[in-house]
Image (cartoon, rainbow over the protein chains, first blue to last red):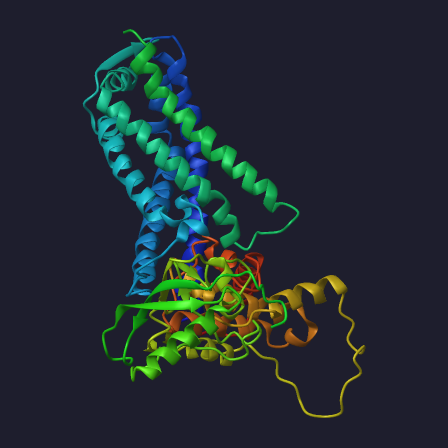
Length: 228
Length: 261
């Protein structure tokens, strides 16, 4: 094995990949949320449809889409490799174990939370991304240009109670995943210091809550307060 | 007895102890009643009492590791009531006293559980994986010769203090036992950061961290997921910052060392 593969297949190296991809996925969440907030314009979905058309056609965005896919794949692949290794590291468990005395629940259940998020992601992509990319949306004309009406698809989806429930529960899982993951990524990269770690921890906590709250408000708003 | 409490009432307890004949046998939890335990006894003294009872009955005594019995050597272990070194923080099992338990309590006692720490017998585990990690680089090479002047190499007090804090690791393995992933990262990080901070350790700095991390992985310890149970259960309070230092050392070593393999 050369030094490169040796480094990135070590337990520390794999965690470095987890942390870098994790923080990259956090940056994606910010962009995604800002875009989604255009659903709140009361313009019949004009701004949101123009924006989603841009996201689906702009070459830079389309390239970043591939990078984003790779980010997800590396994050999930290393999570599986590390989880299998970690399970094998303790073949016989304790008869009496009280980990709640020494660590937070979310930090011990990142794999479970990640799996919930992955299942949600597949449902979410199937519902919005697949029709937006591969067809199946109604057309709508804005300023004499025809767009796919993704807006109406979103509004209709968020009138279905069980979809709203899945969405909100997934955001709770994501919030817990990020509460541990955000600050953990900095620790993994060795960026822990008394000068800035307290800030990173507070910022990470606020980031996790606000981003997930922002996403969860959208289906709740359309379900409870929006009339077609 | 100095410091003993004359009003302390003796306790009767039920122990559930892991018994295993040898490395190749299957083990199980066995229940033992113990009576008349003084709250002034240490946890290990309580086990001594039980073992004397077992010997009198002609039964095999329970094997457990111990040596100095004052929290210095790192030999004692035991996973007591679901916690490494028992419920008190900042103490080893030998420093745990029976006054922290109540009359009538049931106490579970298990060995450290990790693939890299196979059970030798009963509560004794083989911690030689730690020795092999140390042999991979947890030392400095010093040529023989005259004794150097103590002040010949200046070291800032803040650095000396941090290195000393890392050096207090007694290598007991509680970090591995408490970790959900049976990761040895806190132990390895204490050894690496202690030597990386001091001038004497800088000569072998890069190769040391590369080799110690490689050996840690070979031994079959899990990966660190920054849960923090290790530092919470560490009897000498090794801080999680050492793990961040280990990552920094590892990243910079692999990026800049002369070792291509």
